[in-house]
Image (tube, rainbow, N blue to C red; front, side, top):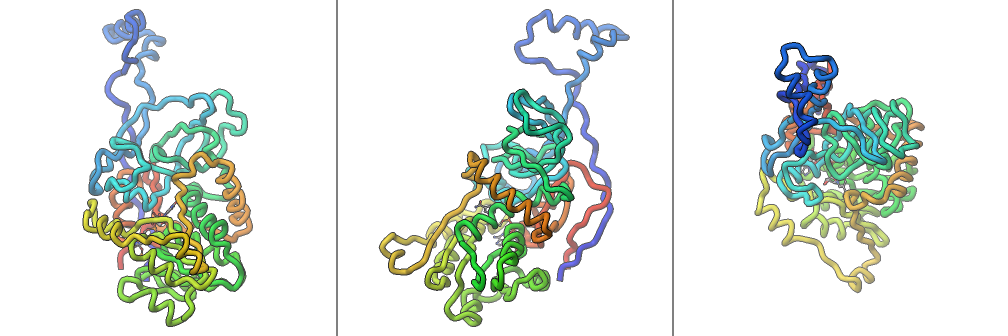
Length: 407
Ligand SMILES: NC(=O)c1ccc[n+]([C@@H]2O[C@H](COP(=O)([O-])OP(=O)(O)OC[C@H]3O[C@@H](n4cnc5c(N)ncnc54)[C@H](OP(=O)(O)O)[C@@H]3O)[C@@H](O)[C@H]2O)c1
């Protein structure tokens, strides 16, 4: 099994301001004079000293190029205030997603090219409001969704990309919720139309989306859950409500499902892609639904694998409308990353999740918390298949943090 221990970690080095002051590129000469004068005099006048003070800076994680874990570096960035319609947020926790592993290898085309700050979700406290922002206040605790750029101590984002945290939720939980739970909710309920007495096959069941999907299945009466995961996680899966955990690494999961349920299942959640999508389609009962939402099979090592890419592409599932008609099955594709303008839709899902959280029906499960400086270890935890639940990054080392120990 997997045990969780509490270990104290040394605090990472505090951010240091950059050397000297920097000036706007096209600063006209008169603007330079007070600063030049203060730089030359032994004891600058207070006002001049203030003018010469280095601008505030903060720490950010930057993907410096595509490749292995070492491509992510902590860098110091100049902080600025929020623009019109934006809020400035002090970040307390950020979510690590599988897509961040793909992005590091250059396999996720929604991330702008490096050097770039990744990060699609985080949680923190509003510290300043830009012009025209009326529905947020300084001090609000918020979670944020964005295409990228959230792995920083301070972020400026459009106010409509922030969502108020439910009462009683920790920053770690709030950073673990948006991507995993919105995805799980929409694929299970909007596409899957999950009903009482149905059966669902969840792959990567012990991971972030998997854990969210299990909890959401449990909100519907008498749902039978089949879940694939590495064998060491099966006890955890059973105790969270998976009736049939399957070790996909040592056995054929489709055969295992059929041994228990010869007709197959009502819904398959497919984050794997390649040949697993066809397997999912074949496992569906009549009126069953396949929701494909990932290509985890692309990831086989630290760096991009052309063999894995070719294999996934070659085995890509394909069906035409006429074939589909005769099968009585549905195939759906889901990508939260392509819904970045759908604030209303996302807001509606989040308010349902907010209610479920308040009723105690869902609760993000935190696998481990890592300071920015240990982003490589955080990524390794997920990529080496050790995580049970969500991997979280924090700008600074917490006093105590839970970290998964290898068995
Ligand atoms: N389309 C969307 O909008 C969307 C949004 C969020 C997530 N997703 C997808 O949902 C899936 C889950 O994402 P997540 O962020 O929650 O990650 P996660 O499930 O926590 O991912 C880590 C776990 O995946 C399993 N795994 C299976 N194949 C793997 C591989 N090739 N390399 C490494 N680990 C592998 C491992 O556990 P076991 O070996 O125990 O199974 C590992 O511990 C991913 O495919 C992701 O891209 C899609």
